[in-house]
Amino acid sequence: MGRYFGTDGVRGLANGDITPELVLAIASAAARVLVSHDGSHRPVAVVGRDPRASGEMLEAAVIAGLTSAGADVTRVGVLPTPAIAYLTGAYAADLGVMLSASHNPMPDNGPKLFARGGVKLPDEIETEIEAEVDRGWTVARPTGAAIGRVHDAEDAAERYMAHLLAAVPTRLDGVRVVVDCAHGAASAVAPETYRRAGATVIAVAAEPDGININDGVGSTHIESLAKLVVAEGAALGIAHDGDADRCLAVDADGDIIDGDQILGLGALALRASGQLRDDTIVATVMSNLGLHHGMRDAGISVVTTAVGDRYVLEELRARQLSLGGEQSGHVIFTDAATTGDGLLTALNVMAYMASSGKSLAELASVVRRLPQVLVNVRVADRARACTAPAVTAAVAQAGAELGDDGRILLRPSGTEQLVRVMVEAATHQHADEIAHRVADIVAAS
Image 1 (cartoon, rainbow, N blue to C red):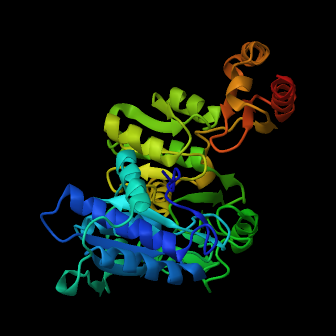
Image 2: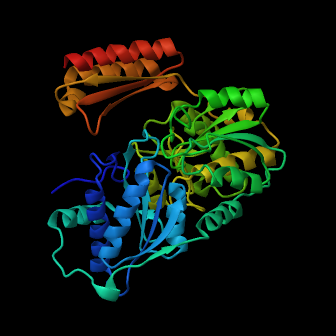
């Protein structure tokens, strides 16, 4: 059986790996699986995309696949990924489809699927869809009136912005922000939402042409935003990625505020308003030790998961917690969203600044990041390398040497024959020395 879904949908080179034929097959297979699970009604799917040029082609393929299987389509146009998740629930749809490759370069694209309620598809449903793609049509195709129809939702952007504004606890009057939209899916709705919330907004990289998405801008190229925040005398900068499911920030001095710091200040904000359930947050194993130290000192527990926002979300749902996220800027506020939402995150950051009267630098200081060094080691067998006696001994020695002031983590790559050696220490020199010492042992094992 083919394996099409990765950890975050189906993604690759549009019209290369991700062809219209493949996307059509996945869409029609998804609709057939929905019907097999609940044939009591005609399924409805919400379809959106980011502004990549290939999105026009792939949107047509998705719609053809869905309607050919008898599903009606609510087309919402160019909107962020979290908007598609929200609208899937708001429109009571059975399926949401977002076409985006997030922070990847423009040539990449692919579909990300949401289940009813706007949650990520369970693994077992993805497996069913993959099997259905490989099997092809085994039932009669709908004809006549049974073929799905397409409806354009003219109110989609307004509904999404109203949802965001309803979740903002404080007006943002007096907050001056520079927002880098990465020429992506949030280019229209992010600046407008922040303005409606009361902020003074300077929007950059907000003119998508289908080609320029993520091209030297956005959360993966934040340096120019940092300079502009200082030049404009803004209180902060917000950097989104191509589909705006994440955000990073820049303080008034041009210093980058990463996802761990946003998660830490978000935890304090929710606790201050009595909304941090069980005084616990969820982070991944790659979150900086500074987050753990800061939360420990604040009396907040941290639960860790494997890398990937889907694992964070699974843990949040299992424990019924209210906040979790990743260092990359995927932050999930479960009381208002079913997935990471960069706009919601930015609004919460600015609202905490407005309500506390404190600068972003002061709020983010709850997390004092330790220097972190990551070394990728190419090996013949990543599983064997991680468990080799010399490697386990070297890791134990490094852990004892670091003590409570640092940590070492070995993580095999999920896709390549690589072992990732990550070390955090009080100084960059110490972290670098230990990381390369252990990496040499891994390479020789």
